Length: 142
Figure 1 (tube, rainbow, N blue to C red):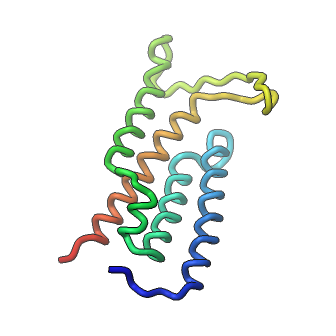
Figure 2: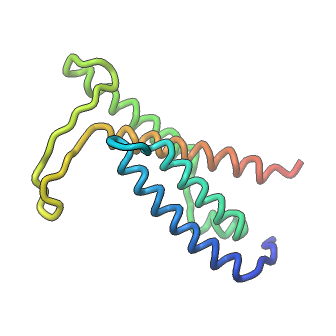
């Protein structure tokens, strides 16, 4: 059952959600050289999703964003663990970061690093865990 909310709330939610998601992407990509990364980017994304869930009803959002947050957590953990183990195959300690600069067609000289897939794993774990926890609490009808 959808609660009746003013149209202004929906409009402000969409604008604010877009701004929060854009900032979370910036934080995610800035994270391996500056403050940010997968953790805070994931929390920002989860906050934007929670804002959408508050503005619209849960069933509408589940249709529009059909994520299984439990699988998201598992995939994120797998990515993070595998990224950490890769260095061990070359005799380096767990979670050793590797990076190099590559000449990419459109982007030009670009730094690629193993911190980015690790941050992606953390990002997925944080978004999945936060959303799973919040939705579980919200759907509890005790």
